[in-house]
Length: 325
View 1 (tube, rainbow, N blue to C red):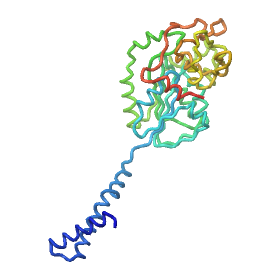
View 2 (cartoon, one colour; view 1 turned 135 degrees about the vertical axis):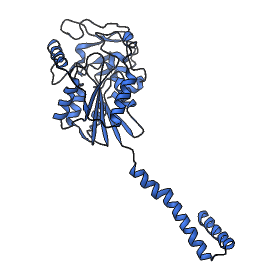
View 3 (cartoon, rainbow, N blue to C red; view 1 turned 90 degrees about the vertical axis):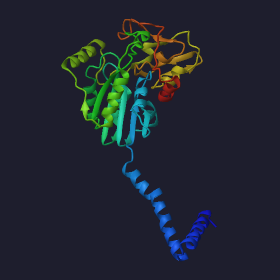
View 4 (tube, rainbow, N blue to C red; view 1 turned 180 degrees about the vertical axis):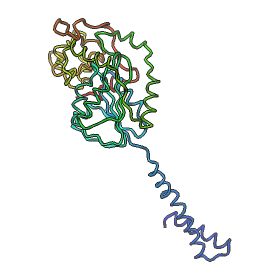
């Protein structure tokens, strides 16, 4: 016989002997008591849990040096699913549904990475509240309005769009060793953004006319197509030097899979996001810019060829897991 039933019968017998009530009445009272306990343990608690169930949040991210992965993790709670956009593209996954959906990406020339731009055009994001956090290192210009236009055209309007300044990893202009020393108010900004999202604030960070003009000037100088952003050829801009030891880190961290191990060493070829995941994450600093007059963006080389950057809270393995093709 089930142990619970034996205990139930024993307790009923004691009630019958002690209180002088009939055995039937004792069993009836015990049944009511057990039923009440069961409702409390399962029914009522379950109903309460359903009524106050936490919101499901999905955060989509793109990262080259870990900044956006770090931000995504800081904005996550126990009911958040963090998903890498390069991995989603690889898996051909574009449909998502949750109570809240967010996207975190770095701006390149004030624009989203090409992969992020194409992803949002194909994505179907079903959520009552959508937010976007755009990270940058120096100038954001009209990045918020650019994302608003792109996402609205794709049928994925975002309720909240803001920017967040972090370490600038643009090697041609900035020394990574100096950048990491600058206090960019990251904890305060994370706290601000977290509070806004918790309140489901509907807000787009304002853009000035001066910022719009700065972006247009940048496009003229760089010659970039505003409908594509940074979408260049890796073989034109990167070279692998004899420092290479064949560790294949570059193969794993490139979100487009542009690097390949061959019998002649590492080769690179293909459309490039200019995310610098390869050059920044190479343990041997074996990848450098291919300088030349025609490469206007990198023709002066690096500010400090011996300095590299990856977010201190993010490991090389994290970058590989995010981007491996």
